[in-house]
Amino acid sequence: MSRRPGTGLIDLSSGQITEPLPEGAVRALREAMAAERATAYAPSYGNADLREAVAGHYARRTGAAVDPEQVTVTAGARHGLFAAFAAVAAGGEILVPQPHWSHYPGVIRSAGATAVPVAGDPERGLLVDPGRLDRALTSRTRALLINSPVNPSGACYTRSQMRAVREWAAERDVRLVVDDIYWAYADSVDDQVGVSAREVVVGGASKVHAMAGLRVGWVWAAPEYLAPLREVVEYTTGPVSGLSQSAVAAVLGDTRAVAARAAGLAEMRSHAVRAMSRIPLLTPVPPAGGIYLCLDATEALRHGIYGATDDVGLCRALEQRAGVRLRAGSTFGMPGFLRLCVAEPPQVISDAAGRLAGRLHVVVNGLSSLRSTS
Ligand code: PMP
Figure 1 (cartoon, rainbow, N blue to C red):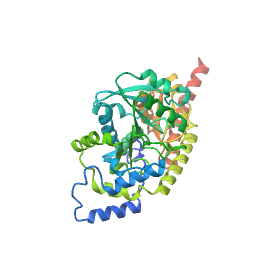
Figure 2: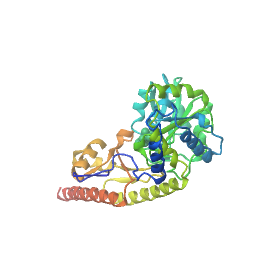
Figure 3: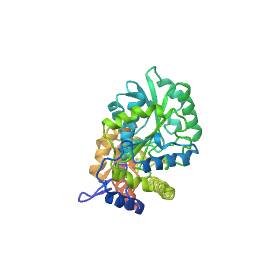
Figure 4: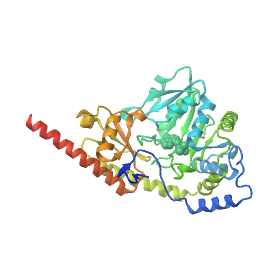
């Protein structure tokens, strides 16, 4: 909920797209609930129809033949990432382009590997390139994690940038783990994802299919990784809820719904950039894709508004003064920025921008009257 009932708070800090469950998913759920073995454990590595639907998706996207046997269903993409990291990099290092999703270091640590941040290039939307990756490479590097569109910045790797990254990884015998969770929310969709057997692809229903609460994700990986991946799944969550899997399997192939959601998100991003451009001292950094927008808070911090010395303090102050909750960029390795989720009705974003602009105009007027009297 973006508007917290009873508090007046507009909460744009988390990243979810909430929509009513689609008709097809409701029907599939009803059928699954009515089945004789509705309460039984689902098959260990996922329902056959879901694994086929996942394989079908990657086959359509890449033109490659995809074997459903190479798909393992996990409890959300988060658990898929955990299993992938444990399978390909336990005891070694994983290169993580920065900025990045706040949870990667913790998930990587839990999987027994070490996250090595690689600072993105400020001249190229904070994305990484072979030169930057080479400087971070050590004898312990096992994998490179790529997420595009990037949470939080919304930057997207182009096809040629992805090709360069893939060549780099292949030449240095580094595995690629692709966090594909936002894949549809980019202008140029990665059509080579997972085509090389050296790549492990993690996806899920949370973002592109707007079903975060059903906790369905997956890993698509070559046979050599299946045993270690499945061992992690077996000894951690066991099979994912069969009911959730039925709902997701029913809608995964609905390419029209995905395209409509992607078009809606593009409008939401543009609207949020326009709305937030009216706020003094905070500057939107237009995202190329994804579901987030970052605001550059350098000016606000330079003026020390509300006594804030960093993005964490500024976030706290804006929540208290303006009733708008954002996320501090430093949580994502992007200090000095604030992140908001744009996947909200336009009015909610406009209201949040209005509140922030109102408060910060008062502050700016105070600053200029101070200057004129000094
Ligand atoms: N990867 C990224 C980049 C994310 O932003 C998130 C959720 N915010 C996830 C993975 C986790 O997805 P899930 O809800 O399917 O676990």
